[in-house]
Image (tube, rainbow, N blue to C red):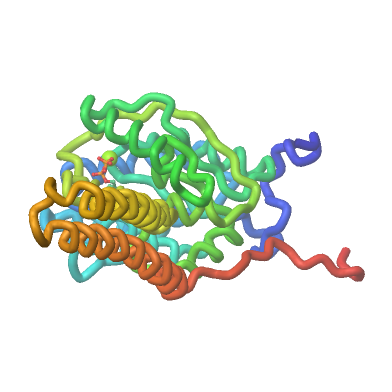
Length: 333
Ligand code: UDP
Ligand code: MG
């Protein structure tokens, strides 16, 4: 990285805000039944951002259909702090959709997505800003350690490594959705409108200058995890199916294997019939041949159909075909 880029300049290279006004940082904050801790979260976040007065801030809380009075607290926060905005969902749409809505509403020069249970420390978000100032367009916070149950740590550890092996894009391990996006990157991410959303994968697939900041993930300040087994499994499946066709390829491979075995079986059955007629029961050969052949053929056909379904799936995802960072012209200053 060039030294000039590393300098602490309060204005990023490609900014669109008017000169004279400080750069605006948007925080996108999904909230689902966080009444017990959300006030403390806001206090700590604003305390952290107050140490960096060279920026303007907006805090976009997305209330994801909370049923525990979180909304009332958020309304109160908004009343006392003009920088707070609340997007109130009509029901629980899930974490990934809540983040998406927040991104849709954010207008900052950089957007930071973080959890509202203080597992993502506000102090670390300032480090993300520093990396942004140093020239990164996407800065992901990567967990060095995490204080969750042994089960969650184990499943997450294994899952991210498996996903990395089968995904077609380079999805970094041990990173959740805690990250900073430059305005340009945030705008591009808005173009991904697929329904099953695995945002960390979409971000990885976009390119841009990406960087990581390591941090130690804290315990949740209050309440239980809002990701029960069911939601965790769905997110895990979305991650695999959105960024990998490995399951489809497996079917095709199984099809080939089944057909090869079937051919061997057919040779065996016919040989028995021709040379050892005494061993076979009448009708056995025909049954074996038909069953093996059809079984193998069916597996293979499923694989072929699967690969077309895979293509249809990719088409309906309607992802951007390419992402342009910049168009450089001769007469540009
Ligand atoms: N969340 C949400 N909608 C949901 C589930 C969770 O907006 O359906 C929010 C939640 O309030 C928190 C963040 O997403 O700010 C992460 O959830 P949680 O902390 O429960 O997940 P974990 O950290 O246990 O993986
Ligand atoms: Mg959490």
